Image (cartoon, rainbow, N blue to C red; front, side):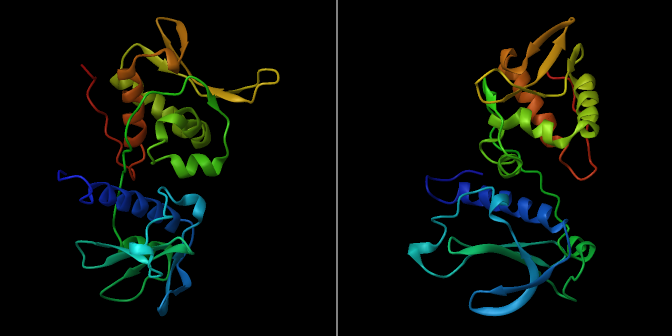
Length: 236
């Protein structure tokens, strides 16, 4: 995706990030009646502010009171509509060519999107301070994802981590990744550390090469797919 500065490239990517967050939230329960600004009530969802992956303080055009609207049309003819306004909670719903979805499964069928948003990849923080779960959820697919890498896996839990371990072992032989752990150091705020083992020597992730750090992030985002967990080739 190319174009001149300020032509909307980043806005498209942010729209996809937001759509991904909406689809994840839609799995938590069925659509409910929601009020729409200057329109009739519909069955849909109110997205919690903590789940917003992008800032929306300046989303309205020319300081208008109208909602900014994102529409993503699916191949089946249905449309995911997301409405944003800094003065109101973000809402989203499906506009369908048949019956309005009333269950989680029906909404998923009406909007059959599998979005895996891979944020910019960057180096890990030397010291990753403990933060709240809401912060991790909000930043998992944001531009700050690399700063919270250890936290992301700590909150996912050990079952998913085993799959991550196996995928890394298949794609980067000779290295074993270990589950992150919370560290308390006297009066200092708690931090979280994550070690890998190579040739029986344990090292914290910060001391690994940038290429390895990027590969760990790529595998993490691949595993976020809906049941499609490819095993990439070993990096050269």
